[in-house]
Length: 243
Image (cartoon, rainbow, N blue to C red; front, side, top):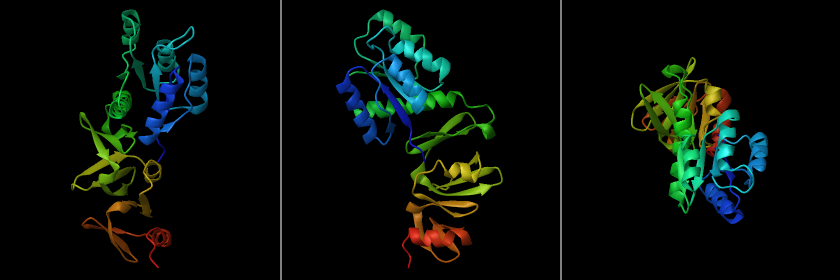
């Protein structure tokens, strides 16, 4: 599964490096930081980040608010404003963009993580179609959000026991006994999953953390049995180091 890629735009190098280090610790992919509008646009073009963290007050003729307008008009990704002692006029300009999240300096790791989750969820959640079947899934680090009626449910990958393909859908079987039906192909959905998921059959993928037992024809996941396809058996045995 590809990590969420984040662009940091901050003209104070020490602060930028600290933010990037924290993001790396949180498990995100981080681009090289940009220190001004021009560098940020170049990185938006070349790196195609999923979200940007923008210091409002940047050196140069264009500041973080100018950059936010550029992102909103041309790139359609969420952004988070970094603020400290911005003057009222600057704050008024920022409010017109209705940013999905703010971070006030100084901030701690939990604030950063929460702001990123909220920004991603607010941005992609608000773009969901009304038709549940066509709603995309938003992936945020260790979980994905799936649409259910008028709610967006957070589903942690670690709580998924196994996944079953059902024609043009995949069905998620959860540790709590619930299931979630998502319109997606098995191949496309498996590309989004963490490395502890393993495809054991054309129609099944399992969470290896919940693997209880294995034989030549099926595996036991939780209290259920999932079949093993012939073409997947050898690789599965290698994965679990069965001699």
